[in-house]
Length: 469
Image (cartoon, rainbow, N blue to C red; front, side, top):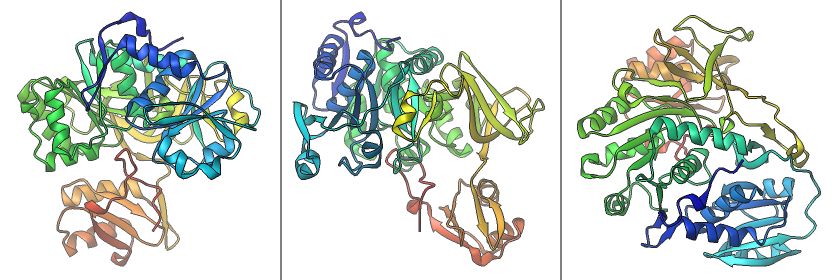
């Protein structure tokens, strides 16, 4: 089941770069065929991708040709000691030529077989034998696993089901143009690419950050209609006083990759309503390909804090710790999703690439939430975000929610099991800190206030909960 039919849209624009280069669907098809011609069937390709033509072409080529690829950020160390390369031993590695030249001595046994767009394709000698399941299409690190070899195994069916569903509820057309405001290697960023090309629209390809003035000038210059971001992006946009009414072509804004504060949801929801645009709040995981739930844009201001309803073709449910389904509204439980977008499972070693569909269409997300009386989902926290302070088990998600209520603003909470760190912009009063500590039976001395500017983040802008002090 191929996700793309590049011949279908022929001479329509597919990709426009911030250098002004334009590639039609026909051009893109020729580029992906050229890349595929260097890959032997049933082989594994590791792609160190960036938001550029090299990363896009390789990723697209593997999806179209049926070649299994591992997609990871070009910012990761691409040498043979990389834990993913070391474990899965791919036959081919696609990486920036500059990085290859810097570490040439570490690639003993490999040979260069193709170069394009400043990248080099290596064929690796002595790659370890392992089977690839026939349904396997793509391997992605989970949000928290870029430093170890755990990967999510996605099938062509997973990618197709999630892409079609997103296109349906967003009503994307060939007139739409999305911007690469997120990394291609991030499941959310990849879904932006998949959906826009599936719908026959075009992609504005740039590595520019949203804090760059040029980014916003490009948005208007190149007529971007779809902007996607994690909560951090929308926080930055508010601080930068971005005026979306000046972006005349922009019609859709989407958010996922973490819980958006109610204050930000209302702010951008009101901006969208005032300017005739649509703001979608969404929820997803790599383990479910990308999207799990979405809040219809019409409900954005009516349901602050909600991530909405199940994406088309899927189902959401809650279960308690004993695995019993929760029927009542406003009762917290673990979020379960079912559908064709649910991944085949994890791989932690190369032998796992031969496994079939372990999940069988059902994913235990590890997130907790509740439904309101209308059946709309609200995310409450993570099941396993706990710290142990003085022998006392503390739910960090509960601390976040309590702090946010007391201080009237979004607060991020992290811990190293010695202290609890609260990242906020507010001027925290001593009484507020005492109140928060008292709610959890803690001494005030274990709480430390830090600026929200110090929040550790990964390359996709999400909070890095794996931080170590």
